[in-house]
Image (cartoon, rainbow, N blue to C red):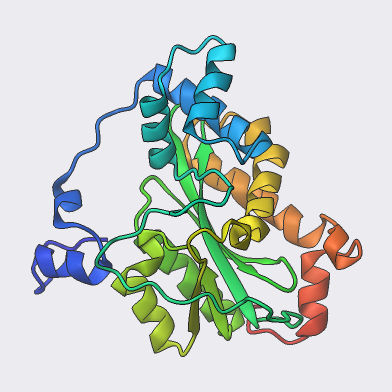
Length: 275
């Protein structure tokens, strides 16, 4: 992502991408096996009880024999990108220097293809370590249009996913995300503006805004990730690719009257740009 041979200085490249200069030079420390086990179990508990915050997760972990405190649970939750789904003053960690855009979907009837796309990032556990997954989803048909797996939760893999979705399927009218620093970064919002896409962001305290994508993450994890202990990033990427192929083309959805996302998407738009 960063090119040290580029005419732009590292400082200016970091500013354009919406990341701190310090993160460019930072070399992450390896996570202990104990913390990896904690994070894997926390992920499953979060999927089962998404309303559980740091205190409740601490108590649930202690019931299972983990000796852990609330502060450490909170630290791991931030690293994993987990947020308890309940109304609270601040629902996501955003960059204080980045602009936040209004939520445009309230009372909006979303019934056609490429009207609204949604994006989010989630944590995927592996046998050792973890990766992050971002997906671009068509709101009306639930179809996953593009996705990326990354070992860091930065803006570049989000940009790559959006660019692929636009290249293959055209542009949506609206892109909806949360207020995470990846989505409020100048690089991300600049790309959407350049494409003429209106930007919508979930509001503070509006915890229901993200439930739509949370359902996708629940399906991915229970139907794929938790069934396989990925040994490498390559295995994780292959597993996610296999699952999204099934999810789009074979898995029936009750919200789509038991049809598949592929069927509804391509029936509504018979000649998309994708092959």
